[in-house]
Every structure is written in C-alpha cells, then in structure tokens.
Image 1 (cartoon, rainbow, N blue to C red):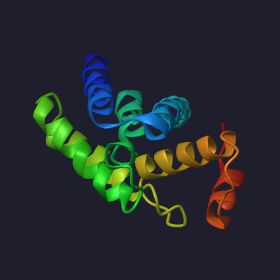
Image 2: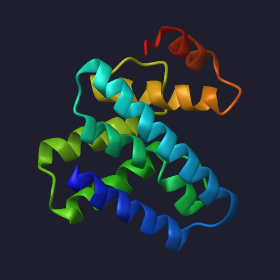
Image 3: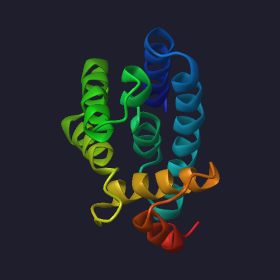
Length: 147
C-alpha cells in the first residue's frame, strides 16, 4: 500500500492547493467514503484492494479542483492518469485499469468490467448513505449490491 499512500498524499496536496470551502469539505467526505466502500467490495469480490482504493480516492477528483461536475468522470480520469504516470510506480496495465474505471463510473446503467462495476456500486452506496436522491438506474443498482 506504499503506492496508495503516495497517491493519497498527492491527492490531498492537490485539494489543499486548488480547492476550498464546500467543494473541499464534500470532496474529502465523499472520496474517503467511496474509497472505503471500494476496499470492502474489492475484498468481497476478490479484486485488488490497492487498485480499488485508488479508484475510489480519485474517481471525482476533478469536481473540487474545478468546482464543476460537468463531464467529471472523464476529467477525473485524465487527472488520475497524469498523477499515476508521474508517480512512476504503476505499470501501463494498472494505469489503464484505474483510468478506465474512473472514466466510466458515471454511467450507472451500463454493465462493464469488474473495476467499473466496483466504483459504480461504491459511488451509489455512498450517495445512498449521504441521503442523496438517487436516479432510477442508481436505485436499480443499489438493490443488487451485495455487501
């Protein structure tokens, strides 16, 4: 988990430098809750917990940095790719897996690979725990998630 800690430290540094107020507070709460849910789900699904935690950590990173949620999955995946590549700690396959999962997490109605499903499920669980009003596809997904 040394690589995870390095990415976490960089993500926190970015938030501290480029975000403030409501966006920063919400980002910390949501990113750590989703990260935790990703690890729990990864454990249950026999997926790599380190990669799952990084996906959860970075899945919405663009929102607090730009204070805008438009196309945030794609923008977050680009920030994640840059961060992972600059760390020089991840191979191309790991980077592609993380970036793809982050980029597809907003489309909850499409079933994709294991890590895409992991982040979608963790995100929906988090929104439910936060008391957000869920969309129809999120409610469907929520009813099928096994913890």
